[in-house]
Length: 402
Ligand SMILES: NC(=O)c1ccc[n+]([C@@H]2O[C@H](COP(=O)([O-])OP(=O)(O)OC[C@H]3O[C@@H](n4cnc5c(N)ncnc54)[C@H](O)[C@@H]3O)[C@@H](O)[C@H]2O)c1
Image (cartoon, rainbow, N blue to C red; front, side, top):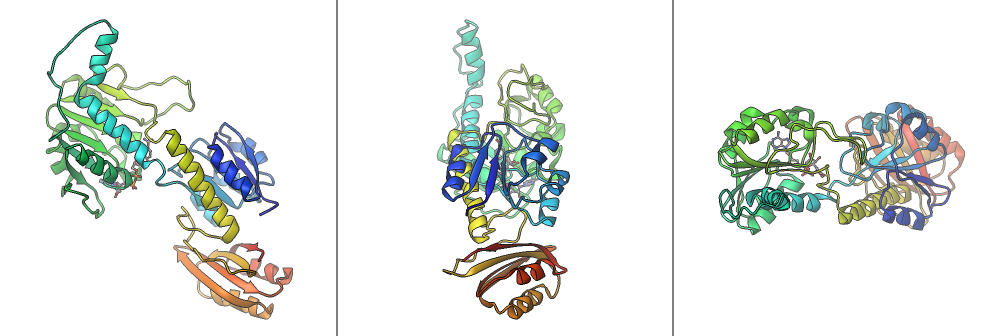
């Protein structure tokens, strides 16, 4: 894969650069985020862009990046990328949906134990020179009820670890999810809230979830309850959470995500939750461990290489999924096109007229887009590729030599 250039920004783990370099891609690394005109100028001649959550790849940026073929979001979320615009330009986007699941779960477990034993309160008193030996308000986890809202990748793994510690797990999810171990599914959020000593929020950030947790939901939790949010900041009314802590209705909370988060390290942090007892605040570090960062670097770089080397779109965020093993010596054509009748027939016609024999082919469609991967033998001239690029439904054609 010579002649390809990658720009990796925001301090992506070095394993990503290593993997790309080993695959023959020239890599440039930057430690900070880029935006607007600066990003556009850095994208000249760049086919591969690697970002984390701080670099916004807007439709305007994409319109001015004609060389770009693929974006790797070395994180979980892809809200910072205009996916519709990327798809319209035939730019594949990949992320790392699983790599930091375990890290988030371990932080949640640590916080459930810390809050249930009032560790931060004890720790603050000791640092202030006060010896307050008491069992009041401290509990074992064993036998306590954990309610998990959102039983996806993180919620379900938390379920397994919490149960191993002796907690009784119940969960609520809007989708059908398999209950792991002895976890019990609740029919409604209300049922879960009324029956949990600890409530941990792990839903995704779909627009309908905005503000889903407010005073009414906290009010349904039993007195002495503990609340955790390591999912998204805009899901929770922090003013209401503050009131419930101050009034003593809730015994503690751990919050890792905030409606407005400072842009960079060292920036000031404001929140209604500052200064409250038995409330653990962390700067969105649920998934931030060295293990997770390394795994993300490895996972996403692997996806980028797979796409550039063989057109593989498995787990792509925006393109239909195609995984077709390569045939030795065959030329591979990657045709991304608008999903409309006749697209495959047009492709077959042009190849036949160009004297190219199709050895294998796979087409997948998703919504408005179709993606056909075709292996051919013969001599592929620019007459054929020009005709394919000129088809009315073509979004993008890439060719991987045999
Ligand atoms: N703190 C961090 O550093 C960090 C790191 C990784 C992920 N996250 C966040 O954690 C959350 C969970 O991540 P995941 O990988 O488990 O996601 P996921 O998509 O695997 O699971 C989310 C689950 O929530 C369910 N859900 C959505 N809306 C719901 C609702 N209103 N009520 C009940 N269930 C609902 C979905 O059906 C799904 O099962 C996401 O918001 C993600 O952004 C935070």
